Image 1 (tube, rainbow, N blue to C red):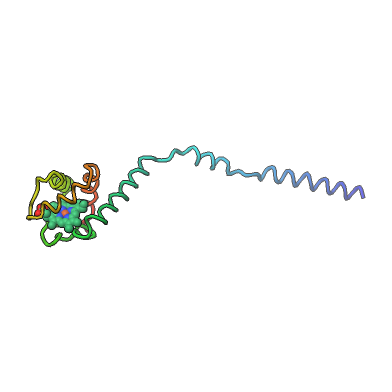
Image 2: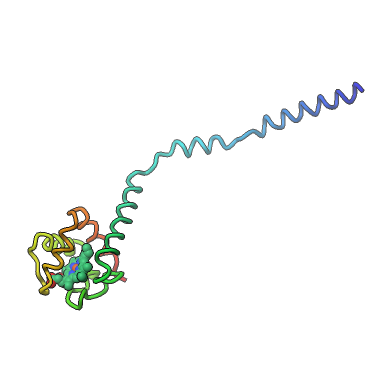
Length: 132
Ligand code: HEC
């Protein structure tokens, strides 16, 4: 009887030691993840890009094509071959009613006046990357 009690006691001791040395050792990894700051800039850049792509798809793509590869209403130049600066300048000029390249300037004025200067800059950068 005492032997059984002794063996049970030993088993308990070994079990305790086993659990003690095998306890969660991932704590360091968890600490490291928690210590890593969120990269706010990257998150913002990604959301600006998503917003810009969304604006392009909703307001520009129907005429200028998925990749800016179409001559809009068979009038405009193919804008994905233009530099970002050239696109931005054209859009700013449309916005302020100062551009009418193919007789449809007032229509593009209607498009551009809905955009902030920041959105125009982002759109211009975006369109310049669309060429395939
Ligand atoms: C309803 C069709 C239509 C939509 C929508 C439209 N465009 Fe245009 N776009 C045109 C036409 C037509 C022209 C030529 C305007 C002119 O006579 O100067 C043009 C011209 C341009 C030009 C200058 C190209 C050139 O030939 O001078 C740029 C850049 C441009 N559009 C960008 C955009 C962007 C960015 C959007 C979305 C915010 C947009 N367009 C929406 C039809 C459209």
